Length: 117
Length: 112
Image (tube, rainbow over the protein chains, first blue to last red):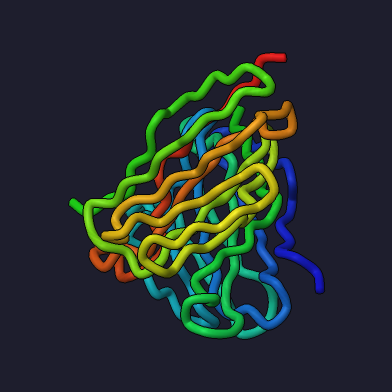
């Protein structure tokens, strides 16, 4: 059973460009979460999605950031017109098996390290 | 607001020694989870505690859920260099729509 797949692992963008980060959840999982992590800091929640629905985007900046989880294909986190402050590791996690308690467990991908020049 | 807090933020340990890291929630939790993130890696699920007062062991790691289900601890005995990393606790907070809320993590550094 393949784990959570994220790509690219590393992404370099110049200021003003767009960054697209992809996440394929574990097989059978229908819940996807995106987190942002700065060096030496904790995980900052950004957005929670289920297939075709945004459930909670309370952690997403109001501008330039968007996320989707289409019926087919991976979840996408899009950052438009990137700035240096967007440089961070972006992790995706998925959940969804078994009992309600078990479904609460999140499985993380390896992350995308975004560097903005 | 409701939150999950961890102390200490940094833990410097001599190899072979024991230490404990703590996790506190401002509200009662239905369950608490612990994750480990190695340097340069991603968070990996370690364990979930559900019952009041529950204690679970994984080799040299002992996890405990408080009686009031508002705090948890992770105790590591005979620390090894493989224990290096950041340990996060996480719990579902009602104020956050019951989604998992992570503590700030305890960064463990092991001195050989």
